[in-house]
Length: 182
Image (cartoon, rainbow, N blue to C red):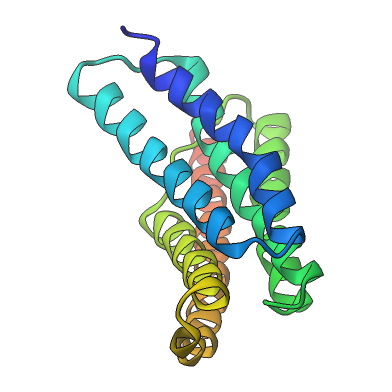
């Protein structure tokens, strides 16, 4: 049973291609259903890992990758069908590239960096998830939700920028402390 959180993470990886295909096929209701299922699997695997101490290094690595892959692919597909602007998808992608590049650079200069999501990072991911969900809901069932799109886009922009700045500042502080201690 202790592998269940990792199996749920694997499920999220497996849901990425069908979600992408359904968005591109403009089957937004089915895409929303699978996207929500993926989100629920994320919540459940996190709960199980913490509640029963079923955490693992593999899970700690794969869980955020599954989340990011699902969100980035969903945003790319939503941009391809013109439901969200390309510049927003590029901003979300640039933020993630900055975080990965910063972690690699830190590791190269200092050594091991234990990456844990910041509160702003978690908020940014939550806002992206809400935006994708609302856009799919609006496109499939509730056209009135279109009024939420622009405010959510603004929040995703602010959250992405704030979390990117937060990560860079955090790593810079850690680097300075490390440099001062050596």
